[in-house]
Image 1 (cartoon, rainbow, N blue to C red):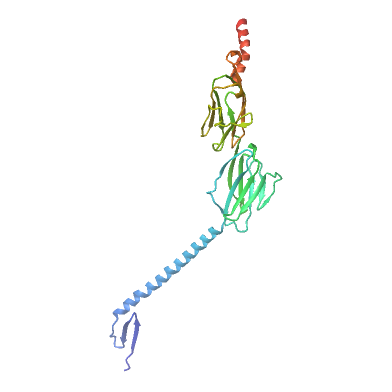
Image 2 (tube, rainbow, N blue to C red):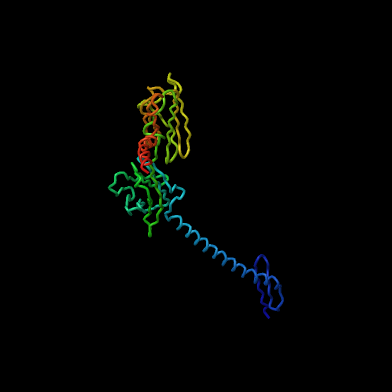
Length: 296
């Protein structure tokens, strides 16, 4: 009788079968284990590829959406009369538009590179690198204080608010507007600068509109300046004489000046010695007080 014989080769192993039922069958069990393993491996690889593709697609979608660079300052303090700029940095803008809106009256100020307000103090500027849309305000006033929002024309629109504070620094000279100083005594004038965004870099004193020369032959003139949240500048003039009378002006470089008028008087006329506005008011009210005390 014809004897069947076949051979299976897998993993470099020969599996032979003969018709009489004899043969080497142990390697066949390894094939039975290997085939499901291969199927499981292919299934895991397929799922992994699908997951990676979805993750990449989601990441790509997030990257193409526009967003604001939040490292740009959102609180700006400006000085009245000095040009101020509000910056808005946008990434991945694409074909969308950037606008500036004033919250106080929901007023559209700019769209793209065009200015829509009739207030010519407002102007938009664009910098390609690093994609900045700048709202420029010339001659700002205290009424310009408030929130300005940079908007991107997405659906719905997204915004980045910037808070602007416009302050008016104050320059004060203690004892003004008139000071009466004894002849041969020391003139002591103190100037304070308050509410400035930063201390003034220079403060110039002048006498009758002429800058004071600290190295003049007159001598005895000194200046002490202390910078801080409130900056003070003290002018000292020793041994005052009549020609030291006149208008003294304190002029910080970052705010308005202020002046005081100094009067040099002789010691033999003490009745004229009224230092500043407060003393003059007190001298005026003194007769009234004495009269009231006599009545009551």
